[in-house]
Length: 608
Ligand code: M6R
Image (cartoon, rainbow, N blue to C red; front, side, top):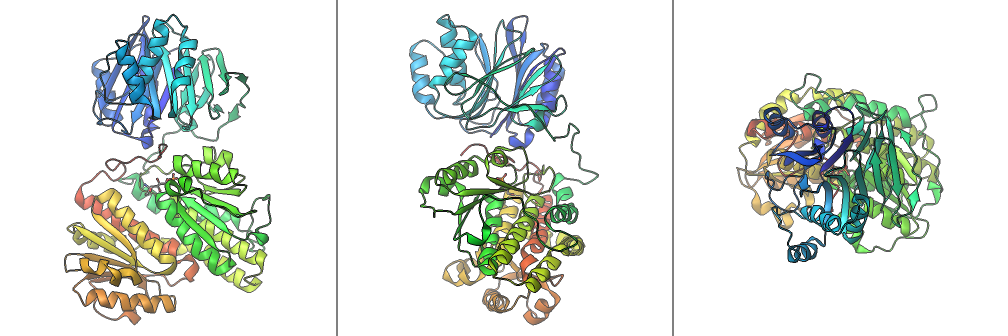
């Protein structure tokens, strides 16, 4: 992960670097630092923790210099302390790095044998020393950077500055994204266009293996073979305005409450209001003829893929294989000729998902990406992009990205089913009606916030929490458990309700809250009720989420019930995600954790 930024400007770089880093804090927030060239020498300031601490350090000890690099870290190698914070520097060079250098141990040994002294536990420091070694051998800064880059194994996005060089910055990418921004007499490097948006909307995305030499006059890109390369400069749609909390206490809460409107925005771009048919972009294959779909993602997006499996199999009668990207990419899965591979990602930068997509492409699959960031690597490389219109999601816990992913996947499943003739016009109309009612139903769901807030008080006391669901709401149970774990640090598990008696029921006693997601949707509901009775018989404290019919059919015995709107089973996973988000949020508040930036996590996971 980590966010990097570089600025060659006319005014002091450090305050601008801080501004850019704040926009990259979603990539990691363990420590931060900046380095500039001042009177020909490299100087730097670093701090453990959030960027605010670095800002305070700079207020005490300002850093002049109009060329500089900055970094916000998500620790991979070495503790998240000031010593290990980037930029890493020698007297001759300073670097910021996003990624992992896999051969750092052997390089470090080699450099130590040459007399280099290392001061951190990181893999990244080796890059600064390696460049220094080549500078010491009288190579020019440009040559030394190229020589060092050729020796690195692993993934990196890098920005490099040199002592004595007030008008040169070198950037490079392999595996991790890097953008170059073009200003007027100023140039920028950044992990993404959003970091650079306050200063420029003219962005060039480096391609795999590229190296770029940047001066205030412009940038020269070289490809992986070292040949000069043309890279398109595009107009970015990212806004330079800082995204605020709009009066909410946390971004996560704001994003939970935005769901009715962003689901509506997403639906408006896929559903024709007149014909009530689904609109999809042109595809290089016919969905009617697809024999199998492979769906791949990580974390919350993986649960969206799991829900989609139920939808595609039930509605369109297409078998779907679902995998977490980190497993899929090394599994060497045989993929069917003419198959479709679906990738789901909020950030569009998740390293495992991106690598899985590249594998699927190599295997001749048509790749479809459901993605929230339109200029992301996954969006740029996919054959077909189905955007979610969630808007920027800042809270580390994914909320509105998930429900808009589900919205897009539901549209895709319905359209595919209709093309294949597995649903008729009437059923399509019913499903689309149910979908278009989701924003209004989501508003109703949000009115339960107070009740859920009260329940969260008890959940916050628990050591373990179980979430149960069946069918398309089994993934909702897993998503509920993930939300609780990541922001409240309470151990939670999501289970298929029918699996309880195969082991997890042994955990049940009166201290374990059991959150049951059970819309009244026929056979699966009845089975869930039986499973929950088994839990209650063993003293489990059940919080039962259903609709009025379901709660009535369930009868007494639950510690609490929440009556959600009665909806078509298709859309239940979208709506039932909301109360589990709210429960996780309030529980985390009771626990006093950092809701938007929970420990050890980052919003965009660009390392594998
Ligand atoms: O950006 P992506 O959707 O590819 O991210 C995938 C996961 O890292 C992400 O969903 C993560 O699990 C969230 N923190 C969950 O809330």
